Image (tube, rainbow, N blue to C red):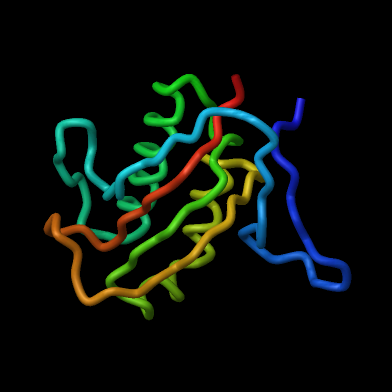
Length: 134
């Protein structure tokens, strides 16, 4: 059962890798703090963007699942990345990581490039919102 409607105004092209709008029908709203690419012990296993992105996504999904939801309940993500050029050169690899963890679910998403992140050596941080049915 689909608990969210994807919103796409008439005549707009289908976005690639995100949704312009998601209307959550009913549920509990879960706000997620920014997640970086460290493991559950707050240890970075890599200083590279792709492995950090993968771990940050896993962290997001773990929090949603702990709250009783699933990855498809994610409605909004904001990504903060330190290196635009590194992000652009890794897009194909990041896309493969996305599909591995998130499948074909594409929340509303913003990508913001920043000077630095608090937790060194973080290269990317992802915050999110989910609406969990029930």
